[in-house]
Structures are given as structure tokens and as C-alpha cells.
Amino acid sequence: MSTLTASILSDRINALAESQTIAMAKKARELASAGHNVVNLTLGEPDFATPMHIKEAGSKAIMDNFSYYTPVAGIPELRKGIAEKLKRDNNIDWKQENIIVSTGAKQSLANALSVLINSGDEVIIYSPYWVSYAELVKLYEGNVVELKGTFKNDFKPTIQDLKNAITERTKVIMYSSPCNPTGSVFSKTELLEIAKVVEQNENIYVIADEIYEYINYGEPHFSIGSVDAIKNRVITVNGFSKGYAMTGWRVGYLAAHKTIADACDKMQSQITSGTCSIAQKAALAGITADLSSSKEMTKTFTKRRDLMYRLLNEIPGLKINNPKGAFYFFPDISAYFGKTDGKTTIHNSDDFSNWLLSNYYMSTVPGSAFGYEGCIRISYAAADEKLIEGCKRLKDACATLK
Image 1 (cartoon, rainbow, N blue to C red):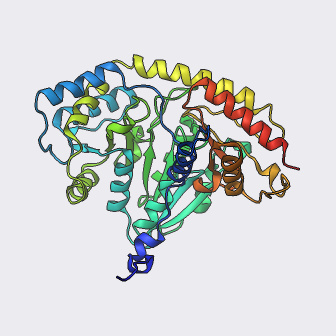
Image 2 (image 1 turned 45 degrees about the horizontal axis):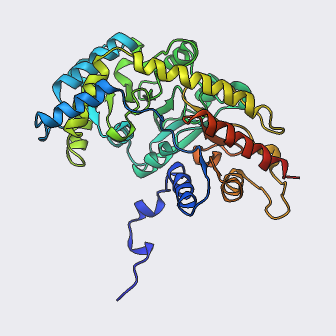
Image 3 (image 1 turned 120 degrees about the horizontal axis):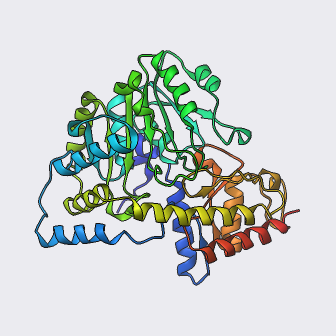
């Protein structure tokens, strides 16, 4: 029997990198299965249970036999509820026909890129960025243009950086706010500056990832899709995983001009068809109810952020920004590059994260996964005792590097 190797696979899949957040979480689970006490702070997953009213709606859908295929774009009442939410919370005035419900916000991002990008088109990605952005662009044969922010500017590129990056091949600008992995939030002023640049470049589109919208600790959330001058060229992506603690339910959505929405409907019809009918009914209960559950979760995340900020600042050599949203820290650990514990020398963030997991059983994600070397991502979507223990292990580990 012949042995199959990667050479028989498509160039497309061989060029695609594995998600490092998932890869590090997998390593952590393997070590835990082997009997080690692992503090896993990799995945961006709220540790809260899905709110009861959402679970009850899902259960009712099952008992009501709501188990048949739905329209590809989503059940009408959910699309209507999303449109009403966007008008109420984001000042984005789209109708039901402009909403496409997908199997998680990740599919919404993939849909948007797949219908916009031609081979060789450039996509400006604000860096640090969520791990899948660059790989999705490559999958659709686009060219990634990383726009790197600086620690001094809370990891946010300047508007001049954006202007300098635009070329005649630029097709899309892509960012998240609140940001995964940094927790940085673009202010209304900053987003209006971006909107002005887009307005002056009529062939450029914006994909705004707002999945962490409700996990925001500072000024009110602002959506660039509400800027009327560029409304038709903004694709707003959101979902239920983070703000509603519905990660496993897999429901996301995008809102866009009907030409783009219809194209995404067409693309999705050939890949997954409609999202799980039960999950859509649960999502409907979430988006049409008040936000009390989401607000309570955010209060808890705020306390955890403050706890982590204090503990991380006690570790010599780390540079820490104070996140304004999401549930991550992105500390700069580059002061430890070139140092060794006597056995392992740390050269980069991959070395650091793998060494930390292998020797101290604390799981993080290297900054290289987010297009930003020199940092690691630590999730604080975990109980206080795990955060305290994780920071203790990180502190103990760093103390061995000389």
C-alpha cells in the first residue's frame, strides 16, 4: 500500500497555516490528558454558561421540531432582529435583505473576502490581527499588507500609516475593534479618520470585525458602518460567541450592501447552506432580549482585567498595555529574547510560549500567530484562581531566564 504525503494535496491547503491558537490549545489538552496540571489561557472563549433564556429557546426549538433546512441567509425573524439591533446599537440602517447569518463570524469573514478578492488584490490588515485574517486572504489569492501598530500607540497604526499603505491594488481594509489579540479599541475619532480615507478611495472596502462589541470597558462602541458616506462599502461582521457566551452554537452574521450580501448568500449556498436551525432560534432569543446577561459578563471581565493588569505588572521585563476591550493581554516579552534557563535559549515568541507550556504548564499563544513578533497573548476568560496561578507560573518562569 502506497504512503500518502502532503505532496498529493492541493497547493492551496499546503500553503495554509494551522490556527496557532487552536494548535496551542491542543498541546495544552494533550499535556493535561497526560496528567499535568495545565493552566490553559489560550482560547478566546467565555467561561460562562449560555444565558438561560437562550438555552430555553434552543430547547423549545428542538421540542417544536424546528429541525429542517432554513433559508441560506438565515430565518427571516433572526435577520429582522439583527437589522433592528444594528439600528438600535450601531446606527447602521440596513434591512433584513442586507443580513446574512453564517456558521460563526469566521464564516462571515470568509464569505466577505471570497466575494470581494481577486487574485493579486491587496488587503490591508491592521496588525496585530486575529490569526485567521491573513490565512483567509491568502486562501482567496489576495496579497496581505500588514499595517503594524506600535506598543506606544496601544498597538494601533496611525492614519498616516494607512495612507502610506494604500496602492492601486488595495481592495479591502480589515480590522477588529475591540481587537483580538490586544484588547485595543478604535475611538470614534480614529474610525472617522479611516472613513475619510476610504471615502477618498472609491474602490476600497472595509471589513469591520465587531465580535467583541459588548466586551468594552471604555468609551461607547462606534461602528464605521454608520458613516453614511461609505456605508455601501462597509461589511460589518459580528456574532453571538463572545457577547452572548454562545461559542459552540456557531452563529455569526454580516451586514452589507445588497450586492455584497447576495453574493455571500450565493457563496454560502455552495458550502454550508443555512446555519443550524436550533442555534438560530437560540440566537434570536439572545438578540431580542435585554443585554443584562452580557453586561454582567463584562463586569466580571473588567474585574479580571484589573487583576491581571496588577499581577502582570509585577513581572520584571514585561511591557503591558491596559486593554480597553475583549479579554486578552498582549504583553511584550522581547526583553527575554537571547536569555536562557541553562537548557533553552529564547529567540522569539514561539520559543517563549512553547518553553512556558513544556516546562511550567502554562499555555499562551505566541505573537507571531497574530503577525506581531515580540509578544504573547494571554486570555483572561477564565476564573480568578486560574489567572492568579497562571501569572505566578509566568513570573517564576521569567525569573529563571538570565
